[in-house]
Image (cartoon, rainbow over the protein chains, first blue to last red):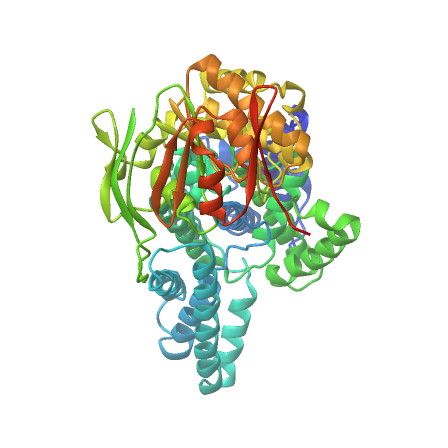
Amino acid sequence: MKIKLPVYFIIIISPLLLAGLALFLGSYDMSPRMVLKIIAEGISPVSSGLTNIPERSIIMDIRLPRIILAGLVGIALSVSGVTLQGIFRNPLVDPFILGISAGAALGCAVSIGFFPAFPVQVPAFLFSIIAVFLAYIIAGTQGEISRLPLILSGVIISAFFTALVSIVKFLVDPHKLQNIVYWLMGSFALADWQQVHIAGLGIAAGLIPIFFMRWRLNVISMGDDEARTLGVHVTRERIIFIAASTLIVSVAVSVSGIIGWVGLMVPHLLRMLCGPDHKNLVPLSIAGGASFMIFADTLARNMTSFDIPVGIITAIIGAPFFVYLMQRGGKESWGR
Amino acid sequence: MLIMKDLYFRHAHGTTDILKGISYRLDEGLMTALLGPNGSGKTTLFKCISGLWHPQHGTIFFGDRDLTKISPAERAGIIAVVPQEHEPPFPYTVEEVVLMGRVSHISMFAVPSKSDFAAADEAIDKVGIGHLRKRPYTKISGGERHLTLIARALAQDAPILILDEPTSHLDFHNQIMILSKVREVVRRKGLTVLMTLHDPNLAMQFSDQVVMIENGKIVAQGAPDEVLTRENLRQMYGLDVNVVNCDGTNIIYPRVSL
């Protein structure tokens, strides 16, 4: 399939356009002129006396980091979705397949439940890495680590960790329970610059190898034996891809909670629009994931007077999207 | 050339050897057909040569390099494998699939360069599927997919081509078409071919050498009309067959009692 250049271009620049637009929208009533003035002041090195007004703080310290964080998490989820779908040769694999979400949930539950003074992000990150690591070890007990055992052990680990989360939820008091439940829904309500920096670094570190090795996903997605005879060191490269995706998803989950559907929906849509070649699909997913998440989070912030957890929005958009895809033509739309 | 010496293979938890001392020297520039009943060790030998399985004993030398000890990328420079056609999970175009043959020439952190595209294009033209270049691999016929996989193997630029049952799942016309195509390109480029076949008539028509393998051992080898004899086929398949000469070619047909 040949991508039409304008389509490619529009998708690639869309995150910047959407981010710009999202800056103007929010629950605090502000004139577009004021927003423009603050942005101009933020860019120019000369101070124009706007430093102490609350509007500046809302734009620069609340909306901007939140939009950037949403974009970063969107990138993480959709790129890891594309990567794992390629590795596991299945367009319906999502970034949480190896137990990352269950691991993060346990980390969060333990942290909120028993160590409330500790920031949630650290245990969420650590536990999600542990979950994937365990899934890998279990898959390895069969000798060679191949696709099916990995998916199966991901399911096992998810189930086990979810059960542990339930124990914690059962034991803690209702107030803490509420915190855990809210965190798990996925939200950017508490975004700040520190989170942007952490997420930016972690996601960039995982994204770089995936980006440069992206074309090899085409070959690996043809199957282990075929890739190996074509000259790919499949085991080694699969570990690199899985490790990089695990890193970026764990970082994303640790700053945002669990946001579903993005890693499934964005790659799917892009594959339909622009074809399955990972050489284009990965850059497109970076842009598309960022755009979609900024869009969903802007909806979450503005749809009602509440700040709805964005994970709910993505699920509300995602489920009907897939029903529509199924209606549109079964096998055709599943990427075949 | 490719020299297999005393290959033994058994599965990790297996109790019997599947290959029991296979030694063979693959003739350069010729098409060799490997024949044998199901379970004879044909596929196992193939997987050992392709580097997918490791023989417990024995060597496979190409020049001074032992294929059982080199990296996948290095092996891909020596042997190109044409697998049985299958449906990949994503609808890559024919061109994208052929381009995959270049992976051993492309650094781990790079995408295909102009010269890789040129090599893929050349291979596509060589097997005559230029009109399919932009079509999804999933939307073309079985025969066309096979041609695509052959083009991919040519793009890989290896001196030895091995084909795993290139005629399986193909109709009569496509079987003949694929094998003629393989013979044509292989002759032109001076490649060496090893392929497995089920049909002794196809082996008779399209190969220069035939190797018969049974129960993990080579039982006969040589020119097709010397190996594909009534006695050999009867012994191997337990079938009563007749071999008749028709227009200079031997035809094998089973004597089925009704």
